[in-house]
Length: 233
Image 1: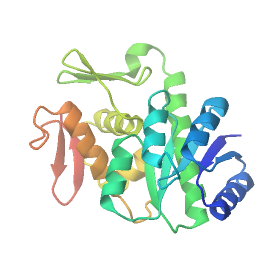
Image 2 (image 1 turned 180 degrees about the vertical axis):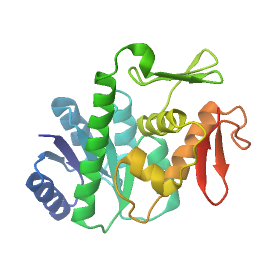
Image 3 (image 1 turned 120 degrees about the vertical axis):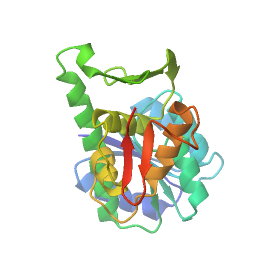
Image 4 (image 1 turned 45 degrees about the vertical axis):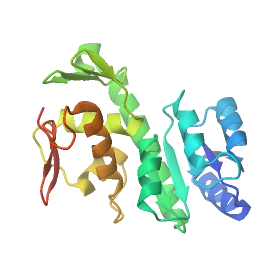
């Protein structure tokens, strides 16, 4: 049974989310503000966090930042505002996915399930690797370890957000192949296409800032116009 922490100050929404997640087999903890969320997260070590952006006192951005300082737990951010800047900032500070209110409970439960399934899949891949060397991918001065989730560029460690690492690992593992944003959502985020792929370019931009010498003229992660993205080393 996975433990999910739901953080939102809207009581009726928390009740509905908690009910649907418990019905789907999850254990649910709740918090109505940012400070309480950090306390519960530290005490219970959840497997996933559903985090509202607009909270009283400490907002969801700051909660996400503080969680990311010590944990790679998947974070699904919620917001009542469908503004690009909110989505970009949320994803860049470490949220794994983003949903805009109002949303269907069926979709939220599906995304939670997919994020947990993706996390478990990655853990199993690492657990069944024969040795550490098989979990290391190297190309053009860039290497990533799937076991330690460490990224090294020209001898220097690069700090990536959890989903940035997942995206880079997938693209490097499939070097040269072009993937559309829809395909990347399905392979990296682990859920079926729902019409919103805006999370992909945000994470691509984040990766380019960290692994490209000139992010505006990338040579490692190429954009194939009208098709998608590919890693070329």
